[in-house]
Image (cartoon, rainbow, N blue to C red; front, side, top):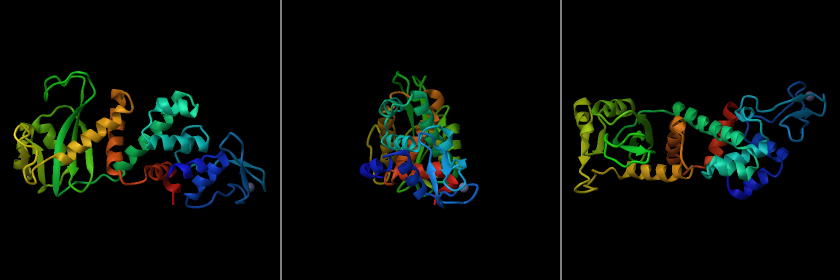
Length: 280
Ligand SMILES: [Zn+2]
């Protein structure tokens, strides 16, 4: 959603409610008498039926009730999250306490994780595989000097999607297990010259590697795709000014999702995840 449409949708809580309702399977009706004549109680997300005068809450099957903020604030949170604003900055912009803002952001991140799990599939065809180190201060080579860093194993299907997983180390056994889990046998796997990839060929994969000491691209043998993802992820995660290790998975999966949906409207996708079964 563009910014001006967004501004209209957050004009006040009633407008926001109507906007969210417009994305739902059916219009809101009174839970008790099925009347469509309802109004929103100010400052609360509670509705009152004009006919039977009873109060009820809409979107009960959605994720909106998980954080007790108005619908306008929810839409604003989704917009700021779409724009990769940190929770800290968002909390200031929203005049909302940090804890609540973070809870709303994490609700969005968990909904992304859920969606990724639902749409999980095996990658095939031409695949690029590579590992990257995140966090920590020390620079170092593979294995050595990688303490305090989180190792991420990434697999990218050319002209398709990227998939990341956190790994404990970059040993052959680990990388092979990660590949088997995500890549169809018979696929061509492009990697760099790291020895950890040498066993792919004995496990049903075609394996071609590029020696980065000599060249970066040799005909079809390159891993520029997955390296493009690492730059994307690192650049975007830097906007959050440090990610706590306990939440790293949420953030790196968010990057996977952002990258795979870079041509889609993220706001609409998030709203869909928030509404769950109530979405049209
Ligand atoms: Zn009623």
